[in-house]
Image (tube, rainbow, N blue to C red; front, top):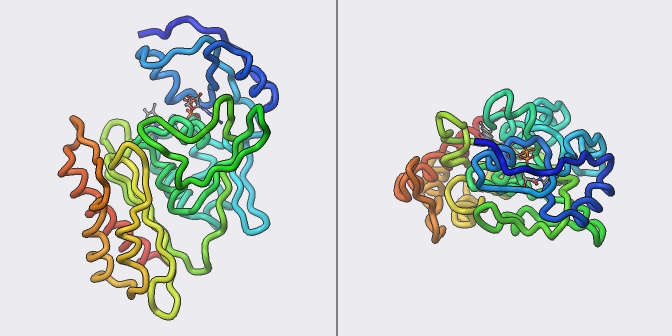
Length: 286
Ligand SMILES: Cc1cc2nc3c(=O)[nH]c(=O)nc-3n(C[C@H](O)[C@H](O)[C@H](O)COP(=O)(O)OP(=O)(O)OC[C@H]3O[C@@H](n4cnc5c(N)ncnc54)[C@H](O)[C@@H]3O)c2cc1C
């Protein structure tokens, strides 16, 4: 199918993109196009004007300074997955990025586009929740910061304000000795997560002192699983602890998705299995 007709404008700066967004009737941003264009071709989505921000170098950078990893929203999945800086400072995000789609998707799709789109099966949201990331946006009223916890509100729904553009993802560097892993049961054709579990754990005095466990694919929005995290805190990092904690995965999640790929029961089962796998893989790291 082909999309409905639309105008196309290429923004030369973030400031120009914001002003085009605010001025245009039903204007939408175009970044990598790997979620927006397929949905327009299927006529699930339409736009009066597409504002192309895919060429903006000011959105394309990766650096770490001042105890913070900074990733420009226009960075592609591949750029993040293959970045030595990300690998050294927040390796969980490098792992997450490497599991997305195929080579073409990773070379075109951007982290900003993915989190703005908020597909319930997208991988980045789990990684951003488990790393306590902050999403920075610019809009007509200036800059705003959103904690990842609270940003993903439901099916294709985020806290992003009208005419705002995500410009940066900021991730505090994790506590010394943090071990991480992302375990994902991928839909065989698209590689989207039927269930994806991102974990970050650190120990102090032989027991777990920092635990982040986040899921994608399970519910309408990615979420941190407090029940699993509580079961880990203060316990020794061993197989018994991980099995007991993983058994609580998605147990407090009222809504679990059910579709032709996986029933609710099967997704709950996968959440337990992949939580345990992620915890075991994190503990085995290094
Ligand atoms: C075959 C295939 C397989 C895929 N597999 C996976 C997978 O395994 N895991 C996964 O997570 N994803 C997967 N994806 C989705 C892919 O990661 C997309 O690239 C991503 O979801 C959207 O990023 P984009 O840059 O392409 O955004 P676009 O498609 O250009 O935009 C998506 C939406 O975000 C908005 N937007 C874009 N940039 C910004 C911004 N900076 N600020 C505010 N709004 C913005 C757009 O207006 C649009 O509404 C797959 C896609 C395809 C086609």
